[in-house]
Image (cartoon, rainbow, N blue to C red):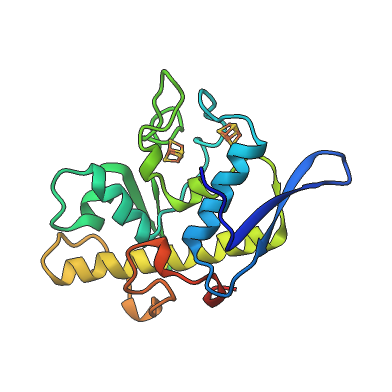
Length: 204
Ligand code: SF4
Ligand code: SF4
């Protein structure tokens, strides 16, 4: 695991004596991929391995458009990747006001469907969504939380646009007949397929 110089995540000691972390952005060109690499480096350097713990894998895990690119690598037929990934691993909830929430599917015991139920490890570790890659169980600074929330919000809205675009090309209708696409204008993630393409500066 190489250290990322564009973004560094560093430990801080909280008032209660526990360890937390904060972010330094060292380069105007830093990307979300740099942020994720820095989070990985921090976890490997300062935290215990998650293997065998499923503490986080029972929580809501929203999906983003770029998560589809990554999860599509473990789905066989990908003519309509967003539809096929969500059909296999996700769920879509649309409330009475047309607000869409797209998340990883839960099993009957409330765990993520990508969790190995016996070994308690992620079956899609190398392809896991942004929300999983950017999470660990210590306190994070407000700046990190704000960045995560912004990325998830934009990414989930961009996923709605992606589903709608696939449906315009012939994918089964699951969203276009219910939502008003005018409520989902392009986000800074529009047209991107990798976290390397997204400059953090455009999100803060
Ligand atoms: S994708 Fe993997 S890390 Fe994320 S919630 Fe599911 S099992 Fe856990
Ligand atoms: S980050 Fe989540 S899965 Fe990893 S050790 Fe902490 S609670 Fe367990």
